[in-house]
Image (cartoon, rainbow, N blue to C red):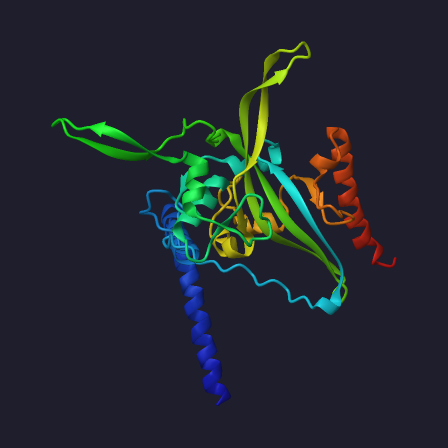
Length: 328
């Protein structure tokens, strides 16, 4: 038996040796051609890319069916600490510029506000908008009300047809008095309502987003008293919360939308990953800690520097609680 096995090993060894000799004997041109073919096959078969695609390195299957990871189970008995915060993300800041990126790719819009509105329009059954002053997600905001905020109210005016007949036409009028219609450039702030929860069983601080609200910064001219009995016009900015959206309802949709990466388009993350990992700069505007009257920092502190210092105190208090649980 061993004699036949040794013969088999000799045949295999001789075959491999002859194939290596044939490859070495080939000209460098033929070897490079073979290697290029191997690279092309591995690129298409392994990575799923198609050379015939209009955009090179575009996946063959453009349908994204990503499912975001399930949150870790938290028992009430293990929650040692919980605090709710409200924070504003300013898209004009350098780290947050991807929130305002104006482009359309194979996954749809990349501007974050347009992503929110497209989700509301595409799934009116499961995803609901809520009133601007209702961050508890109890008072629903109809899609018609959202369109009124963005495009203006519906008005009906008479219209004379070419044949002389008169009928009426209905349309949304953005110039309607008192409408305060925001422009695309004025919606650059997004308010996030989230919770910090410390799990005593795993000794880990969890960050859970509850809802997101776009805020329009509308420039407006108002008349104020000039101190001599008259009035003068002053340019001011009115911060107007448009609507609230429950984050758990849109989490799956955001998991299938990619964030623009200006440095490497091959390395992109989804919007759900970006938000839950806190890859953004923000300023805390409200906290549930010691807030008996449920007021935000804009009402409590008129000085911007004082508001900024109080917001930093909230962050520091949460970080200190997390660090103090560890024993070194």
